[in-house]
Length: 324
Ligand code: CP
Image (cartoon, rainbow, N blue to C red; front, side, top):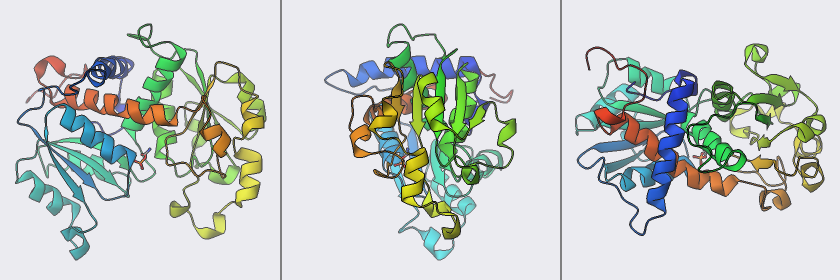
């Protein structure tokens, strides 16, 4: 396949191939010179219509480590503010010779539209669209889980069969939760969502996971707990939970963390709201993988770029369209 739009599009073999390739890329990061010539002469544009720290910078780092030419586009300060459309923006960039577009957009479905509309020929990689999907986040989370729960070398070729992951918080607005439920299920893990009823989406019953309202009961049974940020910017003020009430029922503090099995890890995709979904004590503890997840994000994004753009030997396993 030419694009990465949704974690749900990845087969088990695709996902394991990406995780294994990311382990190869991690070896590059261990070298004094952290660069490969793979994408020399290819141009990648990072097209960000929504704020980002981790995803934008780690895609840029990944592209540069693969020797691509990198163009950074932020909607703020561009002709988007004069009313230019996504189609015209993308075609303008492609006219300058872009091979791949990494797109973050507040509208769910924008990367899918870009990839399937025929507007451009470039490869499209979804860096987070609305409340829909964030596939490279799910991949870096799976990579972190595999390393922590299976092992760096022992994990090669392995999925996450039988591992139990509890995802906690604002599932309603979370593209991270959606992508993780899809990918973790594909990789054989058992997922439980824990959230206030008002922060669960309609139709969650049909997702491949369990739903619970009792965090304290879920914690002793899981191998990892993934805390989500409460996304106030996507919420009507009338639906804001109070910080104190939310933290009391769904926040992770040191007492709650002590309920986890000894081997279990605490994950957070970032950015964290310390004091709301996670206390500073937990965020700074050795069990919290938030910073490790960021480092792993560069390996995963290198792997995705390499597999999608790096040549015929490196295509994802799904068959390519006949015309290619
Ligand atoms: N996790 C994540 O997507 O963070 P950013 O919004 O900073 O990219």
